[in-house]
Length: 466
Ligand code: PFF
Figure (cartoon, rainbow, N blue to C red):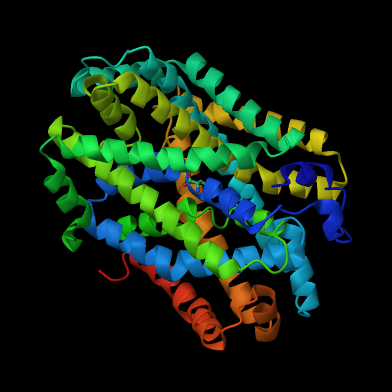
C-alpha cells in the first residue's frame, strides 16, 4: 500500500490530482487498511465491557442489527464519498455538494467527522497504552497465580499511576504520528498482513482456553440469549454508537481511506468483508472473555477494566501463558495502532490540504494538541476521578460525546447527504454497483431504513417509547 505516497502527495486542496495524493497499491491493501482501522480496541476492549454493562444478549442483537442496517450502508457511502471527492472529508463533501448544486456548507459535516476522530484519538491512545503496558508484564510472568481480586488490584495500581499512563500514551501517540508522518513504505500493509491473521488465531486460542473453564455455556447464553427487559433506551443508543465506533464511521477515517482507493475496486464487496471481519473479532472476544468473567466470579458490568482484569487471570494459569499473553497484548497494541493511524489521517490530510502546510507540520501540530487532550483522560482515572460533569469523568464525557452523540448525528447527516442531496445517478456511478437490483436495495435502505433507524434509537434513548 502506498501509505508513503499518501505521505508525499498531500499538497493539494480542491485541485489535488489523484496522482499527487497517492493511491492504495491494490484492493487488498485497502481491505487490510480498512480492516486495520475497524478492528481495534473497540472489538476487544470495548465490545465486551459495554455488552456486560448492558445486560448481554439483547444488546448484542441490537448491535448486530445496527451493523447490518446502518453501519454497512453508511460504510459504503463514506468510502464512495472519499473516492469520488479525492480529498479530506471536509473537502470531499464540499466538492460533491458543489457538484450536486447544493451548498458547500455540507463540507462542515466532514469537519465535524474530522473533529470526532481527533477527540477519539486523544483517549484511544491512552487505552492503547494499557495494552502496551500489559505486554511486557504478561511476558515476564507477572500474571502467574492471579485471581479475580489480585488482578483487579494490579489494574487499579496502573490506573492510579498517571506518569505510567502518560508515558505509554505518549509512546502510542509518537508511534502513530511517526508512521503517519513518515509514511513508512509498506510498513502498515506489511504489519497488517501478519497481524490480522495472528490476532485471529490468538483469539481462537483464548476461546479454546475459555471453553475449558466450565462456564462456556453460561457465556454463550449471556451473549446470545436476548432478554429485552435488561436493555434500556440508553443501552440501545450505546449499541448504535458502538456500531459506528467499531466500523470507524462518522469520524473521517473511512472517507479518508476511501479517498486513496483506486477507481474500479468494488466498494460493496470490500465493505461487507470489512464488516464481517470486524464483527467476527468482536464476537470471538466476547466468547473468550465472558467464560473467564463467570469462572472467576467477576462482574460482567464492571466497566473499562474488564479485559485487563479477566485475561491476565487466564494467562497466569494456562500453559505457555507468558508467551500467549505477551503476544496477545502486543497484537492488541498493534491492532490499536492501525486504528489510531486511521484516526489521525483525516486531521493530517485536512491540515495539509486546507492550509497548505507540510505533512510534518501537520503531524507536530496535531501531536501537541492530542497529547494535551490525552492528559484529561489519564487524569480521569486518578486525580480528576471525582471531577464530573453530569456524573461523568472527563474520559466518560469524551467517550459519550463522540460515540453516542457526534457519531450517530454525523452519520445521520452523511446518510441524508448521500441519499437525498446527491443525485441517484451520481451515487450509482460513484459506487460502481453493476447490479441494478442490488443498487436499488442499498439505495432504499440508505434513504429510508438507515436514517429512520438512527432517529428511532435517539427517540428511544430519550425515553419517548416509555
Ligand atoms: N474502529 C476502531 C475500533 O473498533 O477500535 C476505532 C476507530 C478507528 C473509531 C477509527 C473511529 C475511527 F475513525
